[in-house]
Image (cartoon, rainbow, N blue to C red; front, side):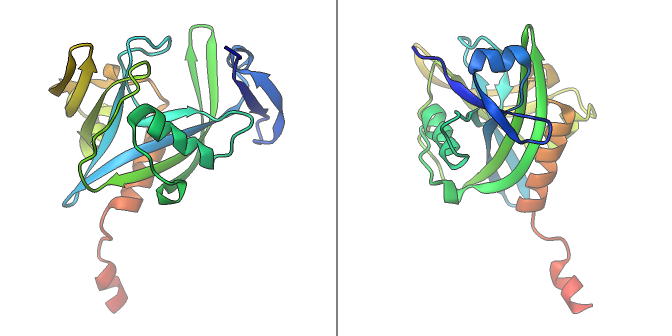
Length: 216
């Protein structure tokens, strides 16, 4: 199979060329990725969806990660990154339905691989039940965690948090309800998670005192 080609960028996020994926990671070159976080809102409580990475993955198998994410090929626009939702979760959404959360740069080092990502980040609020169809070579399960609990976990203000959702294997799909700790998640930079949490809180929480402020 022909290797994927990725656009590479300098520190100022200016495109400087195209390289095969393995070279991009070997050199630690900046490249674009698409991230989408699924959100669920119950009253004033927000929950994040995390995918459970497949045990077949070379990097970070069996760890909880961004709901749907992937590299943008050199020939792709950011808008085309929405394909990740359909490929990984069976969730076909128009790009225009996604909420932009901005761009954040992050480096993840795993063995000889340096994944230097310019992350184009989006979110989508799940308002009704979806029949998710997982890409089993990529995703083993899908779970939810309360946003505040995850925030406290990342900030090391608690040791464990509760997740609920489902996993799949060769015998089918089964429900999951259990506690996890910080080590159960892909070790993204703390600043990445802080950025995402703040953006989601600003976008999805009800305005505090907005009516009162208008009356002042």
